[in-house]
Amino acid sequence: MRHTSVLERAILQVQKPILAAKRRRQLHPFFYRIGPVGLSICSVLLVSLMAVLYLSQLSQAVTANQEISRLHRQAAALERENQDLVYLIAQEQSPVYIAAHAKAMGLIPADPSTIIVLVVPHLKTIPPADQHMQP
Image 1: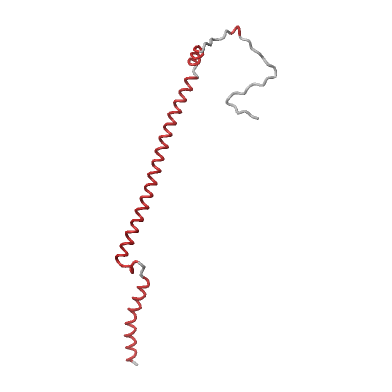
Image 2 (image 1 turned 180 degrees about the vertical axis):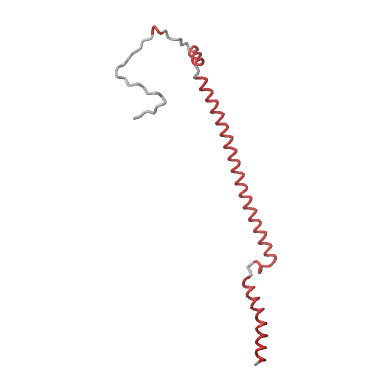
């Protein structure tokens, strides 16, 4: 009996490393079974994919930056145009400018004694330009 128990122990001791190796083999990921060449190819493909994704993001950032620059230039041009128009309006609303252009067109100031004022009864007054008209 003692002889069989020693034999059984020896068999168990031999089987334990075999079982452990089988379990390790089952737990190993796929990368350990493909070998160094396959692993190198997978690594190169992964690095290439990351490079393509990086370059794609970089090109999108450059495109967005160019669009922002274009919009800033357009805003500056519109601001200059707005300032020019404000200056032109201020110049054309000045009394000196109006009098000079009226004189160039052959208009002369009216004589206050020859002006006739016509009064229309029950006429509604025109509201000032800054008030909103109501229906």
